[in-house]
Image (cartoon, rainbow, N blue to C red; front, side, top):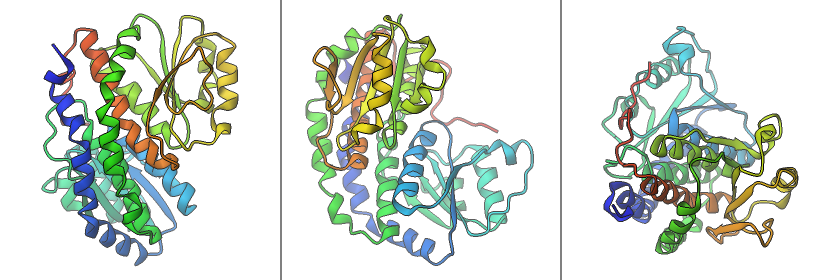
Amino acid sequence: MNVKDFKMYSEISQTPDVFSRLFNSEKQFEQAAEKIKSRKITNVIILARGTSDNAGHYLKFLIEVRLGLPVGLASPSSVSIYGAKVDFKDTLVIALSQSGKSPDLLAFASASKEGGALLIAMTNNSDSPLAKAGDIHIDLSAGPEIAVAATKSYSAELLASLLLVDNWMGNKREVRSHLVDSSKKCLSNISDLDSFANSLDARREIVVIGRGYAYANAKELALKIQETSYIPVQGLSSADYQHGPIATLNKNSQVIVLSPSGMPREALEDSIARIRKSQPEIIWIGGNQLATKNERVILGASLDSEEESTIIDAALIQYLTLSFAVKNGFNPDSPAGLSKVTQTL
């Protein structure tokens, strides 16, 4: 089958419309910001699983860099399995979930509110239990998503995170509206990725690395390849990669480096120098400022802002996943053993 025959392709293609709806729903971000400012918030906890957890890494980095607040990632099992009682006075809990139905997320959300937290729920289902549990609900506005592998809803989580922090800081949304056109431009040339997907070898080690804002996309690309092509893939921070996993690297390895436009050179410079010593195949997605002439480059958004480029480049990793799965003879819309809503306890 052709990649365009799959729901996953259709849903990736809807991303610009999703972005437009988010920009047109500015009131929900303003209300969330007002609610946050009405409380003396000293720290943030992000509650999520799976793809939403990957988006949570983007939001975590965004808050730490732009607001200087400590941000932690929740361990839902501490409540759902171990029955922990949490003291979350002056804590903002931001719950990210496409479905808003996972029992462990609901248990942690409930416990956090009982512990004094302000709860913002960010979901793609305004009627979900998690949406109703939040003091504020942010609707991702992605519309129905049928393919099991989340695409447009993940991109929506990234943009919604940026708009939330913008409003929290008092920035005006007009500075971001160009992202709709940037998304359309990215999608207009996305089939160029087919040749790379065809050259990627499922029989050889695949490693995906990123850093900063791009760490979220690195984890997401690795997850998507695993769930649609059924092969183990590491998605790591380039810094963490040097603390042990790099020992497995060899000439047969394929290293995909996420390097969005606007990323500082020093974010990846040392890691790439070490990686090149093992002479693996290196593929760049995003920018080409550190690439050598014999390394393949898939250009992404050409924006000055790293956080914006990361959002636009998410469509590239989604399409790459789709094309690679189809090349390998799999149906990315319905991966074996997975369902759209994952009910973890």
